[in-house]
Length: 152
Ligand SMILES: [Zn+2]
Ligand SMILES: [Zn+2]
Image (spheres, rainbow, N blue to C red):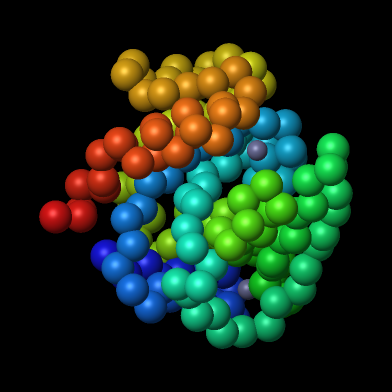
């Protein structure tokens, strides 16, 4: 399906120029908790060159343990739309909650669950890792995962 979304205030919108499979995962790390102001963040890894984006962006970049990340936010309302990372060149780490069709997003993997909020019970049978999985294991989980119910 083509994917489309935008920020809280509507100044920034994006859409994919092609049909893309969507596999959403939840990150329970402490960065994501602080950044989202919530218990975890919903992300999707998608090809950067498959998207067009309109509207004013601002950027926050940092380096952590040799990995460089650049986060792209609406310059007006500061909703984070996506980030890029040197650990996954050419991909958007999309904030899946910015998708217009987000009502049925169900994570197909959970990472950094050593920091998972204790009240949160994860469903059985969904791949989960205490920290980051290996790229190979993560790619396998994302690629074999089921698609959202709305996707034929
Ligand atoms: Zn905005
Ligand atoms: Zn995280």
